[in-house]
Image (cartoon, rainbow, N blue to C red; front, side, top):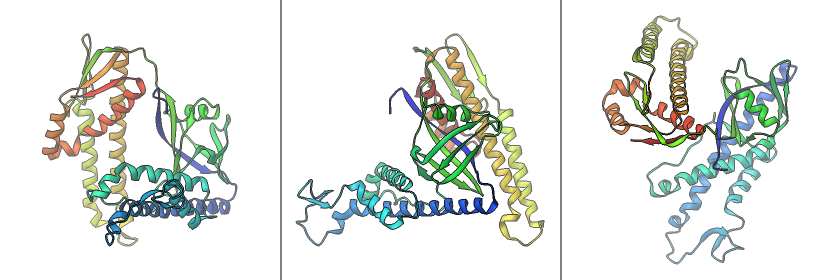
Length: 365
């Protein structure tokens, strides 16, 4: 990827664009079958990669064994009859041929190998257990799996075919940039990288990965903005000529605590709920409070980080220094209340992502 580009991930809800309930039900079954095959394939790939890497340890009965995990035709010490990446692809291709598109199999093979390679030294040393994939994991596909992407001006949505399944997007009011990104993909101005399909609570979501150019804001690297994160004021930022406080304790913390109190009150009332139908029905209201708190925090952190980056752009500050963060993180780990209710790491991650998009260098002091 070009260094002037970066990737964004956007969660886009999809609907199956078929007329009858029976056809939509059959399409859902197909998607769940693909998800199941990906879950099984990913676990098989991880297991085989681990065995390949540890094969020398398994050959402890002989001291003169020499081997290389390469094609035997390319090296006389090679023990494979094909390239190493092709070994796992051939494994899952033979196992699930005809049950899932080969595009998805190729994508899951590449993503699993990439994830395994990231931690392979820790796997081999015994410091990390082998990764385990869950049944509800999102499954990947490349852009070649999307055909006929088009925009309907009347309905304000996009339609395409995900392999053999017709899909239509549900964007709602779309206060984000999802619609504009999809239009740029349709016009060839933005690249859609390998993305994922997530099936959750009977809904379909596309976790679209878009490659975009970084914004040119004519910043001055020598101009520095210093920002401090705290529980009293979420963000305090200043330059040589200006200062700004973003958010307040009352706005962020007290609202979060109010949601927690509501959840606790609901949990205490569960004992008086009507019996039957199991645990899930009784805790449904509690789960709503958890989701409400999670959504509130995510929204606030996005707002604070956006206001911080906008301030830096306005001041043409090309460098942003987060001061005294190491000390504050250490204090937060020791104080349970602060650790539980102040999202240091989440805010820093959002600041980093938005700063990278704007071309601002981040320094954590």
